[in-house]
Image (tube, rainbow, N blue to C red; front, side, top):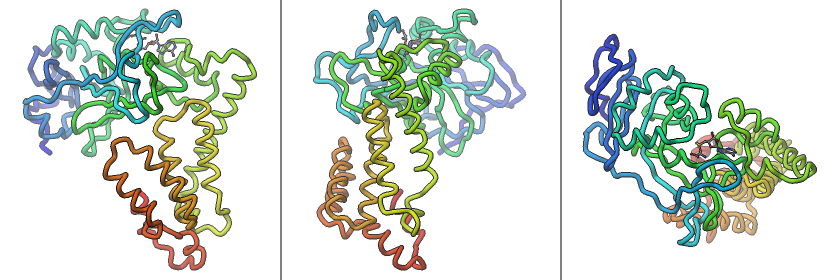
Length: 381
Ligand SMILES: C[S@@+](CC[C@H](N)C(=O)[O-])C[C@H]1O[C@@H](n2cnc3c(N)ncnc32)[C@H](O)[C@@H]1O
């Protein structure tokens, strides 16, 4: 990977940069543009950020791809515009790609917003107009700052060891509303400088596509407080609008239980369970299964469902339970949408469980804890 070029000294300080220029608009940071198809992206990155060489050569990446959605009004819910699965095409399967999109703007998350106006001068007039037409949840603030705050995604990493967190504005994804039971999840890939939005459960034609803006494992009151504080809106998603008080309490209890389960699961690793004579055989399996039940009931699939299913299969493998290993291995296999290579590996293990790398491992480790081999951890990653 090549270092960003065209650097200026960090003491130079230019507040306005004409389009296509690379330069410094904040000390220690470099502003530059990238062309993706017909649209331009403006970034403000620390000057030591190392970008993939393909981005440094100003030759140009694929434009965004829009697969399966349309943007329209959400109707009487009052959430303005939203992203919906297309009415034609049979909906989107779990794991299916909804959208791949490059950002319009990328800037440091924790720095003041005065550079935004300069960055915006660097993008195409069309991109600028589209940005200025996005929703603004902070009408009392300066308009551009309010729009960027309403529509920024935090968690855009530059990879290559760069630690600072960035936020990005994506014109299409900005129309995706929040839900406390979201049906889609985004991931950022620094190598292609693009975001991918994927369905976490099947999305029917016409159904609204939603993501989570905050951690949704808390109670309704906690979630609403957080959304109010950071995003300045009252959530009207289905999980926050359950008609009966009793239903709402059940949902709160379930989410709080899930948060506790996830804490317990983080506290005991697979290797520790395998080597532990005090934790019972079903300890991890029971918690993963309970977490799965809650996730499915509360619409909290996210990407975790696959991790729970994988973990259960691995635990049954470590217990040397052929029948249950095949059952859960089969579920793990079904969850690999288009994952040809991974499916083939799983097929092999299901066919012949004895070749599974940690087959019977808990049994063996417990029989002779001195032979515990931490290098096998690598197999499980
Ligand atoms: C990133 S925008 C989403 C798209 C927006 N609805 C639009 O018309 O462009 C975020 C804004 O959408 C609205 N919004 C998103 N999710 C919502 C929800 N669950 N409940 C109420 N309003 C929501 C809020 O006004 C919020 O400030």
